[in-house]
Length: 431
Image 1 (cartoon, rainbow, N blue to C red):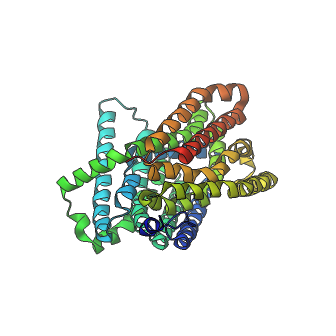
Image 2 (image 1 turned 90 degrees about the horizontal axis):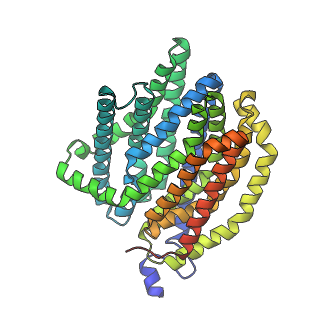
Image 3 (image 1 turned 180 degrees about the vertical axis):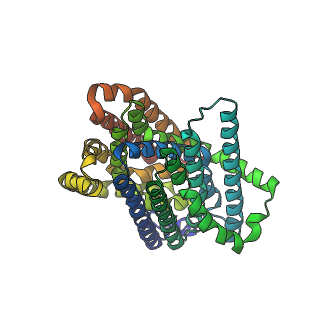
């Protein structure tokens, strides 16, 4: 048993390979995510402060559809790349990354052309919202592609710096777009287009130097690239569907409120969601470091023991953070976003417990996906959660207002994660 554990980089007392290295990776990943989130948060504050609440509500809806479009075009290939290449040689990881990136570019072109053709023949409305949202979403996929290579190689210093660079570039572009919007008094639709180009600007700045350093990006191998794309989709289809459902679930309340004719309420709810997502920083940082390890782990008993320890020891931390939040959230929201967004606390009070729970349960979701190789379980749980929200959102708002909608969203998220946690602690790894 000891020899088996040593071969796979685990020990009787440890729960994953190279524990000290793991903690270092988590710290590096946390630093990058904290920096990137701070810059993204600053971008949101900039938009909120410089735009009328109704105009910001329109931007919030646009970005909501944009993140859904991003999930649609992602096809689960990022997660598949992690699974397929985490145990490969560095040279193969690098070569396969360029194939992965070329695949993303091709998918983006196909989806863009399909949207254009559909609008030309009248199958899609020509309002501009859908096309601009697709532009933003596909740009997000392109500009974030290198982070999967850094994760796979476990180069979390580079991963951290890359996250910060992308967030900074998007912040700078957004600030410039707002300046042009106010100086030239552009239309709201023109502002949407400018904001949608932010991830493409970040992709241009970060990827062009990489392409010049390695010209293989410019020399595609269509047959091999197509075969690899099909291989990634074969695994990633469940992750893709789950990711799509995640974004629909996160953003549906904003979309539903806007459809009900209240752009300002949609903007206030979006601010609440933005604030609640801040608590995911540590979680997502840990998951970034854990995912490639889960993908290559061969001892589920040791992994589960560590996950259970994380759950039991992290509980008091979650309770403490929740208590501090309820003491300070009112003044902080008013100071950062302005009095116009005090209504955000109504939704945020209900959403915060579910977001804090992910500090404990998101690693369970990652282990189910990468360790147990059961992304279909995550998908079905997400499908039930999302369908319940979409079907119940109208009634929740009608009878209980924004608070009822937020309570419904929070309860469904908690139920989903408790189910996946139970599966992670009792399930068997697929072959």
